[in-house]
Image (cartoon, rainbow, N blue to C red; front, side, top):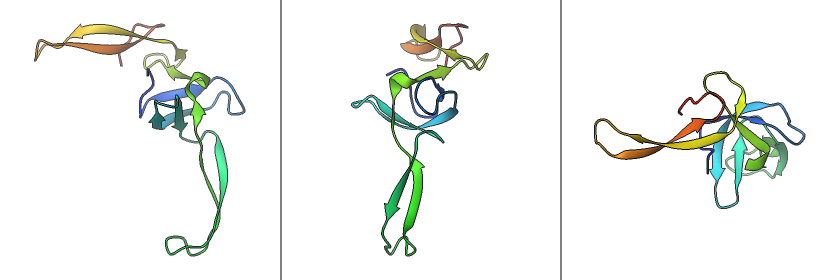
Length: 107
């Protein structure tokens, strides 16, 4: 998966098209993720000890990862993502880093 937790993404399809947000949780097996402030759903909860009032709670629901694009850290525009092998100077091992296709910036 090319999208990880704490990445900043923009929604490119659906009702929330154009909204930007931070990825809160990723479900790689289902290819879905939760983005902050996107795909808000209302959940009716009954009173409990934790929430004695009960009522309607709003929270984010999952969105398919094909409907979002990562934002380029350099320009802030949506970009595709590739990978590049980079040698770690301290350990001498190779690591796979994500690279923005538009600017070549690593993140």
